[in-house]
Length: 116
Length: 115
Picture 1 (cartoon, rainbow over the protein chains, first blue to last red):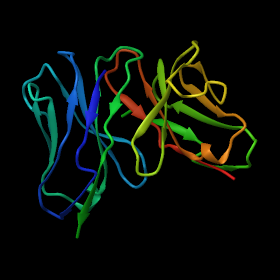
Picture 2 (picture 1 turned 90 degrees about the vertical axis):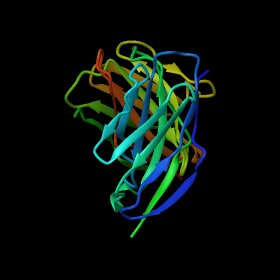
Picture 3 (picture 1 turned 90 degrees about the horizontal axis):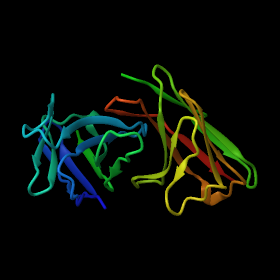
């Protein structure tokens, strides 16, 4: 069974600094998808970034980038130039395939506070 | 991007009553919808997966007679909490996926409080 582990329950960082959120996962699959979701105080789940395992290049979306280490089963999220609006719960997530019923498996989350 | 709506966004009910939560995909056809439950400061817990026109598949430990899920059309799924009790108070989130579309879209959630 697949598992996703986020070892940092809570983090705080000053505005404009860079912060890295850790995530490790366990799977026997070779091809799969990894995601980072953001859940701000509104509780709306927002997709931040996703990575296909077959792609070696790390995904980036503006200030957000990942460090995907497939052999180590590690998938960390780096937020550069952090902003107050980045304050949220961040969930690392895994999915095997985009077939009809395949489930997204979420980690327990990291609560990130951006301090003014 | 695609939009998923939920209604109501917030509901309070008395113990023993039933509550229905609607989840709609507004601009796409959702072949599969997922229902999650989230307790404060915790992660999303998948309750069930529903495919349009089929019976829902419930996760282990989720009472199917208590949490009735119907996915009668490609744009609407409903979750009915039957005979609600205070321990059913939680935040319920639906999510929808279109066939052959490699993304899953989340609704804004429904906060249920059972008195």
